[in-house]
Each structure stands twice: as structure tokens, then as C-alpha cells.
Image 1 (cartoon, rainbow over the protein chains, first blue to last red):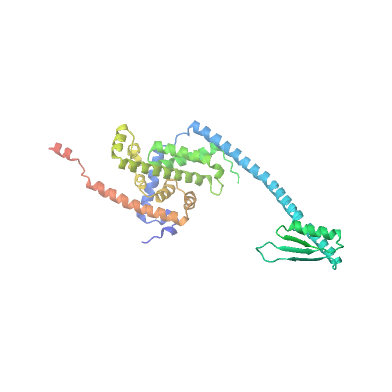
Image 2: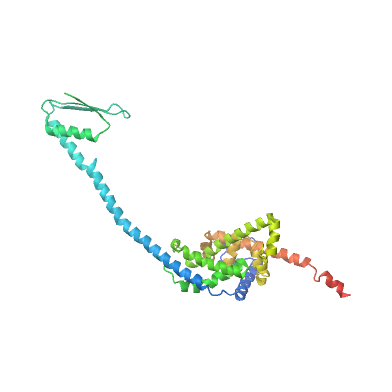
Length: 159
Length: 189
């Protein structure tokens, strides 16, 4: 009879000769266990085990303590970094500043012509700015801000 | 996940069982003691890695099987070295340590089917020990051996087939040995 071993559920499904072998193995294992019973575990080993288990407990508590402390710290650092990024570059504050500069420029269109031109992606950009005579304070500040922010441009001012 | 263990309870519950499996695996009381005690030592060392996904029962058997495999590999290497260095093997015998381990093996074990099981490949041997010595369920064996259920069943089945073949061979060998030694026949007259 062909038997697919993977479909076996119980030893009773084994062919007779194999079931007999299995029975013999069980019986002999019991006999061996009776002949050679497990002695008591060595007291020194037991002490070592106790110490190691305690040590493991301590390590586990230490690790979980570190994790518990790290989570709020990470959250704090993350939010601080996010705030810093928003405040220093490309954030709403900076956007507001450039908007005010733009409005200042539009208020005096005849006096200042600002023409930033980018020649190509690799080479440094060239920013040519012409100043009129009656240049207002916010306009100068706005231009200086643009220069400071964009370090890759070549600054050229013509009067 | 934290796993709190009561050491005394653990030893009381599992030491005898682990020792019985070790006896069947090694066939030698001294090695079995060492193996069982080392299993508990390794367990206590690695307890931080124990996730609690399997039961501590199957976890202990997993350690036992790994230690047994390591020990057999070490013994195999030692035997190969001794075979290569024949002279050293002879010297070893003279000094009194057993290169093949046979003098230390228990007679009851040598006469049992378990001595034939010891010749099977590790996977089949371990599956058979857990099933027929420890009466573990197939699912538990699969957990302890970290292999699929189908593989466990297949290993047990093919292990039993090989065992039957080996048992038949050894029976034939026994039949070929004369019932009475020749020198006894000379004294008969």
C-alpha cells in the first residue's frame, strides 16, 4: 500500500510493520528512562542558572527602560528639528519675507528692474540687478536677502 | 514580550524529559547528563532572545537538538582526524579514551532499536526521538525543529523505513553467525 507520509495524522495510520517498529521504540525508550533516571540537577549549575536568569531579567528591564526613555527624546528632537527647518529655510516666514520684497518691488516699478537670469543648470547662475536712484530700504534688504540665500549666483550690480 | 520563569518549576517540569531524550540520543549516561544540563545553561543564557512565540517546552527541545547536532559534528571531526592519523588513534586507545565512544555506551541502548536510530541522518533521528521517545505531537515537533509539518511527517516515515531496513540487515548478520563458537565444537567430543 502506498502511503503519503505528509497526510499522516496518527501513528495508527502507519503500515503495520512500521507501527510495530514505532511501538518497540516507545517501549525501549521507557525502559531506558527507567534504567537511567535523571538525577538531580547539580546544585552549582542550579545556582548559575538562578544568577543568569536574574541577570537576564535585569538586562531586559534595562533595555526596555532605554527604549522607554528614547521614545520621548526622539519625539522631542524630531519636533525641534522640524521647527528649526520651518523657521530657517523655505518655511512660511521666509515665504512671507520674499512676498513683502516682491510687493515693495512692484510699488516702484520704474526705478528698479530686477532680472535674475539662470543660464544653465550646471554653471553658476548669474544675477544682474540694476538699481535706480531712489531705491527704498525694504528693496535693498530684499535684494541682500536673495543674495545671502542663494550662494551659487554670481552677483553683479549695475547703476 | 517579557517571559517570567520560575527556575525550580522549570527544572521540575522539564529536566527529566530533556534527560530522557538525551539518553536516547546519546546512548551514554554521562553524555546525557552533560547534554541535559547544558541545555538548561544555554536556555538561561539565551532567555532574552526567547520571544515566547513557541512554548518553553519546544524551545528547550530545540536547544537540545542543536547541542546534540553540534556534539555529533565535533565527534565526527575528531573521528575523521583519528582515522587520518592512525597512530594517534592507537595511542588514544592506549591512553584509555574512547575514539568511537562505544565503550561508554550503555548495553541496554546498544541492544535497543535506538542504537540503529543513531545511524539515521540528523533530521530523521531528531524527529523520531521527539515522536516516539517524547511522545510529542507533530505540530510540537515542527515547532521544536523549526520545519514545516509535512517535513516532520516525511522525516518520521522515511526514518522508520530506513530503520526497518537496518533492522532486517542486522537480523541477517546475526543469522550468519554460528550458534556455537568453533572452539566449543572442539570440546564437544
